[in-house]
Image 1 (tube, rainbow, N blue to C red):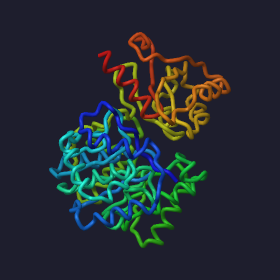
Image 2: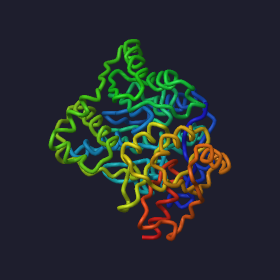
Image 3: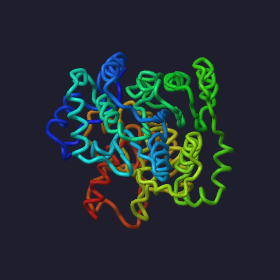
Image 4: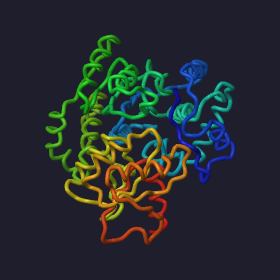
Length: 402
């Protein structure tokens, strides 16, 4: 098995020491040793002061936004909180959101220097080291909202399970099948085995997930709260909730309500002072005719169709290998006027010929997308969808244009 990470952005402002350390860890996928992180954590544990409350976010879709809503709810009540998420769009610092802002290069470097005082951290992979940085940065915070990578019992973040106050499982879907298994049962079992003594399960797209969650909760003697679609719909009718989510896509509205359930489980009912949602590229309108979304699997594609309705758009798209591109584009096809292949430079990028062959087989018109001002017309609608690398490339072009 391998674990998720992301290559280091050479434009980052933090120290040469930290950059060199991360680059030495490997690219997006590093060889995974399920014993390594527990071994490192066991060595470090006595030296760390952990947050009083650790909330572990696992699942497939919506981990980032659900975690951010929880962090914002805590901030609104005056609590100190670190939200650790992955991957990042533009810079590595984005993974560490502390008390309402992305951590500075100085803070990140200080955490890195602390870790360098322990020989065992040199063994850590990219994502393991990012997790360790988050643990250092969260030491002064009351709450640590910690997002899993691929999720599951062997995830780097799961070494915290005994310390976790609440596990939160967002919708579990097909993704990373080459690592987690080909069936939804296999994927769900791997993710749900990371359950702590108290857990919340968001509404699931696949009926197989909930029985597996209940069986694992019984085996682990865990308290499991399941949220139903009906409870989501009822909550969205409350005026204060409806006002906050008014401009959100439906999947973000649902993630917000899941976050509210988490906050209530933590004893927080008042969200009147919750800051505005600030996690980019989640069905985000950056212009009247342009939406960007880091959708990466079939369920994300279905969510996008729900947003678009009968509207046809130019789909700016590209993806990584191992993604079910045929299913994703089949779902999106009724909404695609033309597919614009966005160039990305990444070791895991799908070869252009493979993407073209899928488009041809599905009867989807395509052409190359040039990242320039003239490629975006004011009289056309665009959806930028796919890997983080696609959205990153487009946003860099767009921000430079502005």
